[in-house]
Image 1 (cartoon, one colour):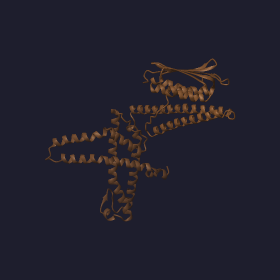
Image 2: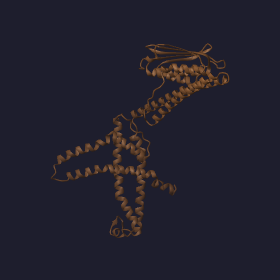
Image 3: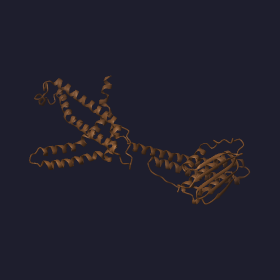
Image 4: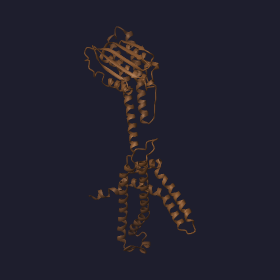
Length: 414
């Protein structure tokens, strides 16, 4: 081991930060020490009523022990350990009370922190000034005071040995702080780490965040994908009749503008939700539902795809979540029909007190195989939406066409 590696713990920034953490325990233990000194003095006085002092001692001890088991004390220790010891500890789960085992671990950690911190502070108060005095006398400082004192086998005239002793004391104190700090950093995850209930709560929160991100990804895929498909079809149709039908081109450009504006609004909405989730804020915002179905069908027809839409029942009677997911399913189905199909699309909606049933049927283009995997991410997104609502989806070839059937139950969705 080189000299540089041996001295590295003494000059490392982590050692100094961990030393501050240990000294913090020494500061916190001072009231306990003062309390112990006061009661020791009271018990040593013969004229004081001993039973009364013992009663007060029991009460004071109970009050002194209570902070060790508080959730707030554990939260403060976790914050200090994370900042000064460099340990990646999660914050306690808000609203979740710590169990007995977690409180005992936390109390043991706090008590150990106070005891070790008190010892380190005592060493600094006593050993550090003495070591500095031994070294200073080598340079002629404080020689008169040390010459009249003896330190075991040494006295004030043994300046060389006293200087060496001072250096050894400083180095030993530095290694002691580095070692105790490293030990504290290794024990912090064991004694301050999350309880099983907190781990489960953290996993559930992470799963919720991932589910929300997946939902936002589906929203973005469906809305922007549909807008791009419609805009592409409109632009292609306008290009074909650019010279002979200016009125159609004007209508196509208007449809492209409106579709792009709607897609931009959806994109801003999704990005806003992502920013809010990163900042820990909830950002509910209005979303498209089956109440907007007429406009969706009109936009699809304007793109050149004939849609025969039939609706039995009133979509306004549907729960919001069913209406919202139903709209996205229809949107993705029309988008796939525009990409891969030809001819008219038959869209049927049936709203009943028990369920919402959707059916989309269209012919496939001649160069597109009737592959059950057609639709890619869009079809996967449909399945996820249906699965979340406990519904049923079937999609696949039907003769020369493609048929999608969806059933979304209303029970439990309100």
